[in-house]
Image 1 (cartoon, one colour):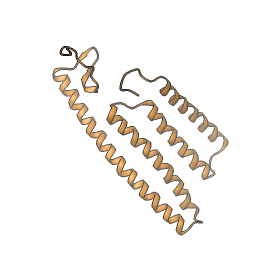
Image 2: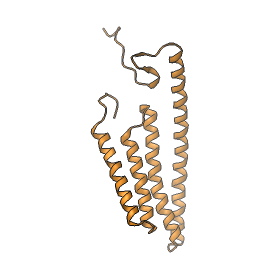
Image 3: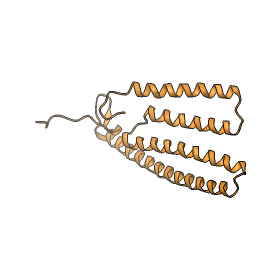
Image 4: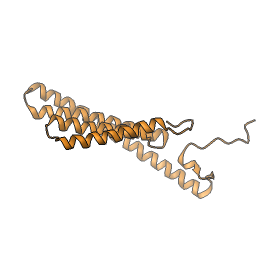
Length: 163
């Protein structure tokens, strides 16, 4: 019944505008896709190691703040490390989504950018080094990023497995 019916390709190496990839081009594209998957997997592993190191550094800073609670630099470092862990978690999610879907989703990428901008905003506010113009520029950037995220959620592609 379904013998003559082909399913739509889901991997980039399987897609060529207008036709299925065959022959030498198909072999090269499949090789490229496999190499790309290996590179992304290595990057995910490195991100995991970085995340583990960041959490260990966070615990070290907590220990340092408990030993000498009045030390302002240790507390600043603690705030920066906590926010950096959140940025790393979002980046980790971006790479794992790429490995799963073979594309970077605008929604996830905008969330990473929002978390990063908020990290910088919180660090700047905590250090008392942001002026009114910096705050206005950051607010405008956040508004654009939130608008991009809303647009990404509102206008998602209409394909079955895409977000």
